[in-house]
Image 1 (spheres, one colour):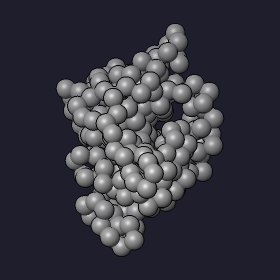
Image 2: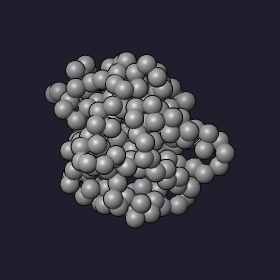
Image 3: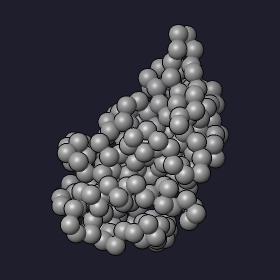
Image 4: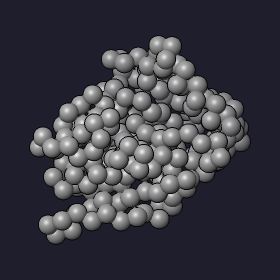
Amino acid sequence: MDVFLVGGGWSDAHAHDMFGGFVVAAAAHARTRPPQVLLVVMGVDDEAREYHEKFVRILGRVGVTDLVVERVAEGSVLDAAVLDGVDGLFVGGGPMPEYHASLGPTYPRIRELVRGGLPYAGFSAGAAIAATTAIVGGWLVDGVPVCPEESNEDLGPVTVVEGLGLVEGAVDVHAAQWGNVSRLVAAVESGLVPAGVALDECTTLLPDGDVAGAGRVWRVSREGDGVVVTRWG
């Protein structure tokens, strides 16, 4: 499957490293015509729309000329019909619990399409929900802080839900920038998730397992009675 996981963050200098592979995969899916990319983002108010323009600009910078923007109002469900006929699906960043709630009913259709060859790129929240066991927020395990409170997504306990299932384990994002490696370590150690990866900002985990961009990806797994953290790539 062509699944691209981006840890969040913005960088013109690393834009092609972060998103170029996804655009190439979408072009291969389209074959003889310019690829149509569907950008799914959360929120419809002015503040959200201003944030969405960052995605529009950066995707245009890396060569996307046919971009369909689907803005989903918080509390509503993504219409699965918007997925029909596109050559790439890019799920943006923002409030992780709301992305899961709004896209959750369409997970089976998204899985079907991606397993059938549709390239998928997840940015921050879009990367987190791509996992089999998705961490959608929280900063406490058994009442004890495991990462900065600012990472909480308005949740107290570290919260895990059933995700898209495009990648095994869990995916955490903004790893170095928000201190979320420690949240993933705690989630694995406590048994909330079996294993996972934490991605720095401006960093993409590519389908072939390579890492592109400015930062690093960390793999967290159980070993015996402990937890092992290793650098990926």
